[in-house]
Length: 353
Image 1 (tube, rainbow, N blue to C red):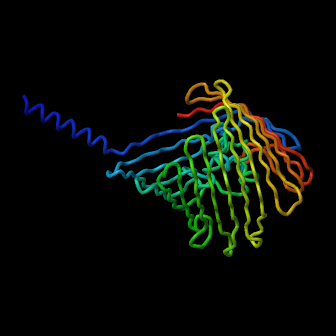
Image 2 (image 1 turned 120 degrees about the horizontal axis):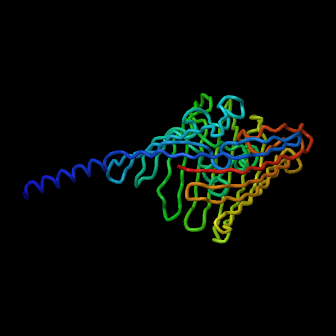
Image 3 (image 1 turned 180 degrees about the vertical axis):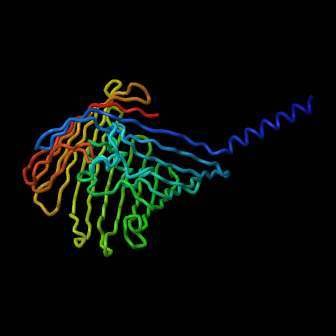
């Protein structure tokens, strides 16, 4: 009996060890749909919008314990049109519902005491810092979700990219990302690179980023420098951002400056949000775009939330900037030089699984 018990215990331990060695895979996602109204100064539109507060996505995450504190992992994520719009039905729908299957994120990597190495298609380091200070998480009505405003041209993703992130050093961290030129249609060996140094511990977050992206003929199409910071005072979390883009004149892209202030505060179970962003084109005498946002989110559970959002953008000169850069805003556009403003309102529901 003793021998049988020992054999059974050893067999059970073997099964446990084998189970622990098996890679773990997680299916997750978000469904986000809401009623929206947009007006760009030449008429309004009412519609059922997709991915307003959070993008509608589903994805897979998995990891494999290699031993010695080292883990291999993968992450795949794709967008979908939760409001029933068919991708490709229009330019707006195709753009907003995602750049192809698993086109949001597709990476494989290693992490351990040495840090984290990633390869594939991933969010840029600069975009990660936008996300950290934006209480609306770069949503479709946020100025950080509008590539024509607060982000002043900084791309959301790099394809054909490799990145390295240091281990956390008592809150300090650093990272570097390289995109091969073929990822943006260039023959250059290096198409773009993105550098980050930051601090995140307790209530304080600070991030400093630099990005350089090549264009045809070796010109610099984007030279983006930014400082982002936030502090949580418990009663309110305040964030701020300063950015500048100084591409080569030969690229034909404008030199831009931007700054933004963000705030979020608990109000009972809800969270109240306010944002203000300004973009300046250095070739004109006054800021050419300003946007403010107001919003409130209310959790029904840990996974499900209701939200109400409002955004208003004012633009000057021949530059036309519209609320919502993700494709939901299909209202008629006012002619350039009219000085018309753009507004957006959204009431919706977001659920994670």
